[in-house]
Image (cartoon, rainbow, N blue to C red; front, side, top):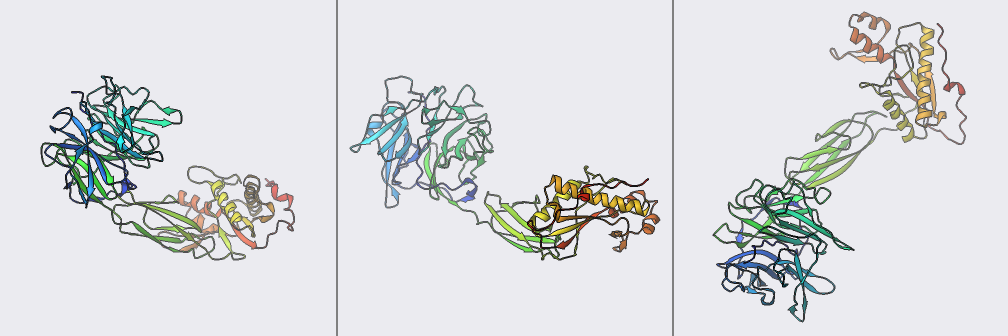
Length: 536
């Protein structure tokens, strides 16, 4: 007899649930009706009508080639039970025969089979196709696939319903172990040469009976090379880009996989059918129904910012049902369930549960209307001591802070602001006043020249050391005005002394108008673009 053959390629009647939806199964049931026998049944394939199932029967004395031959048999669904099986006489010969796929297209019905119908002695080189004519299956014609030269003892095939993707397993020269999974694709110019499907789904053991879901992104197969329940288990893996890049295989679980051999899974709606020898020496066909997980639902509740340009907004996420644990990802980079300290804006959350159900929701944080004359605290725009050059280092990024100011102006195109800079108390009053003006103008020039803000919407103002900042003492909770006297009293604490002086060297804004009109506003004074020399 020629080599034994594993074939697992089938038509799926309904859309396959995404693999992430696999949650649990009902208890396995030996397929009722006339399919299973004292012989071995494997390789189920549904016909397009969903009422006919083809399969391989081995160890039956009625097979053309004898008891050790593999023949194609079929059964019809009758009143909810599979009727008595019978062989497809004109498609069985003394070689091992098996069905690859059953196709129904605009031309008619066709069957793809193992190519064992030519005079060639080597029947390890691919598949053949038979067309239905006058209710009779015609002589199978070999399908030519370049470089498909299969060595080894076993082979299995899957062909997509579009007849353009062929997944198969055999022991090739570049296999990880025994049989590995390979793929060939078809273009308008014909079939392309096969390629290995990668080490993620191929192990040092064997991988057989592949099935690719209709969306071409989820592969089911049997393997004895990954951690499982027994001899061969059923797994699935998700495509991550190219055909040789797949996720880590996931075992279908103890209900489906027994301590013995399990393979050749097919699916119709919520029903799965596969071959197993869990209850005896030889394989029979079993069925179970997949159970969908509890539906993942989420809800967002938000609290708006309490003051204009504030950052005390909050969003509370509630997760209903689904399967924990959950992976949470917010558009601002946070991964906690609830988030706070939020500015005005839209925030998107993505929640994925343990079985891959995904929900995405968006919440918007609003803020009160603009208030005239209100001081706006900008993020840290900081300067070197006694200079107006910005600090940009691993701790402070003044350019990012000025980008925040530009965003404010772009978000509210009708406002005009004073951009106010301050100094600490070190140095004389006159020099500090000029220094603060230069710092304000440095911000002005950066916003206008680098960030392309209309110069007429910004008025740079220097306040020198006249308006010290407020500081909340974290140890006492007391709010303190950072006067020269107070700061000098803690001069022995060099770190805190410098921190408090830096707080006084701040830049802030004040909204002075809400009626900017690009067509009527006058040009900004030229001196805003110039720095003043500080007298020595």
